[in-house]
Image (cartoon, rainbow, N blue to C red; front, side):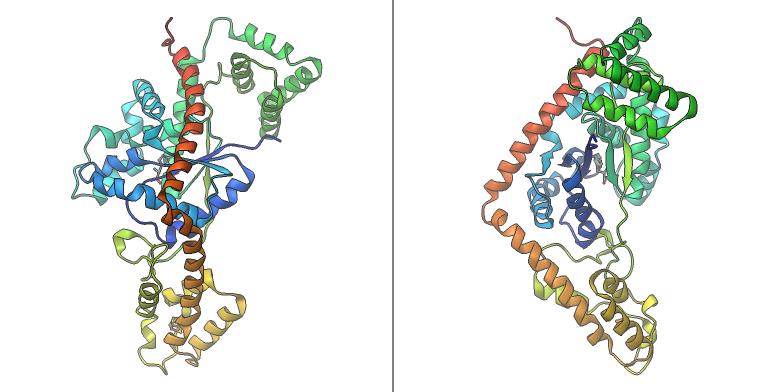
Length: 400
Ligand code: TRP
Ligand code: SF4
């Protein structure tokens, strides 16, 4: 079975916190074991909102990658790179901008939302409007199948699908497509050709998605196909022209929502974060001063864990018996909040120690990180260049 390619990016806009770790990075670590994964630093995306403070981006790039490595992202399994080191992303973004209707960008919900949220900043820029299209280029250039993202990013993946479809529709039509596709089917050899035809019929007549997947897997396993035939066969399956760009899927991360110190979502802008690789003392102080259920003004007052952000931390960090102890002790006032917080402090510190330990070699020798990224950029660039060859050809730009 063909392993689907996974791609995701993160903007370098400051230090990473436990929300990134539990919400994103742990998921990347799991994915890298089963899929070919590409993870990249979206520095150009960071510039769309931080164009007036580029220093922040420059300062965050390396630390962010060290945080990834600390979290267990493994450069032997996944390809790690920096967006701006693969300039083909910019070329694809430009070419897609030729055929992307303005309305598609204006109606992406993050466009207006972010402009309102970051009202202090002038975001009526060309670059910011193009943010989701640049993201589409990031995804399409690797023909990624799965894009792990948070909920707010799903519309960007949707846009990417529409862009891919529009691109294939506009540029995937070639004279005599049907004949060429049928010829390509024959080249599969009689056994595979029969299976392909049967799966294609099942998908086109009965809408059988499983059959579509099987047919794609069949093509993926077939070695001796030219690129052109491969694209024709993919396109022919779904009834369109040549499939030059592949439609990705959003992979919604099912992570426990990491609450901040105040119970709201953990986020730099709420000043309620615990950073990755933060000092023990500072972590301890932050948790000790966390708000608890206001009903427990005095030690003897009973409380309700559901109304307490500390409980949310227990959900992530504690085992069943500790959680039972909290539930019982809080409601009966048999434990105090200081006591209740201790297992959380212990849990976070233990986790931080593991992360710091993993980060140590990279902190001591930043050259290691540079090498990992140089290596990843090179691998990513090869893949990107392959797609760009097809894109240029399809758009009539491969002269000479
Ligand atoms: N926009 C994403 C975010 O803010 C970052 C990003 C840029 C991205 N390009 C991407 C994520 C491509 C997935 C795929 O989180
Ligand atoms: Fe929160 Fe624990 Fe105090 Fe209850 S005992 S209010 S759960 S800190």
